[in-house]
Picture 1 (cartoon, rainbow, N blue to C red):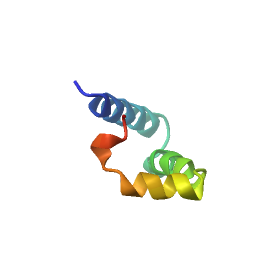
Picture 2: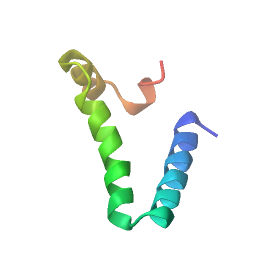
Picture 3: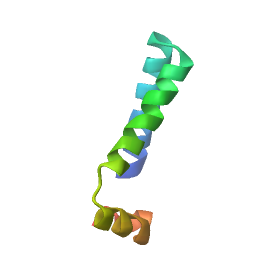
Picture 4: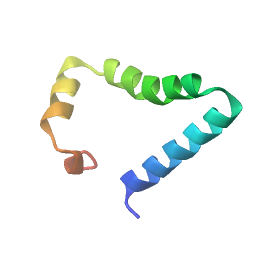
Length: 60
């Protein structure tokens, strides 16, 4: 199983647990807010590099 698949399965698991413990909108806000906040914390040159490289090349 690839690294990306493991991360996706973990994210779905966390989302389901959050959805059960809270309501749907709080779970959706957490699942969408954390990656958005991480992207916004990147430097402008890091954002450019992230947009430029393909998804398969990010692990290198």
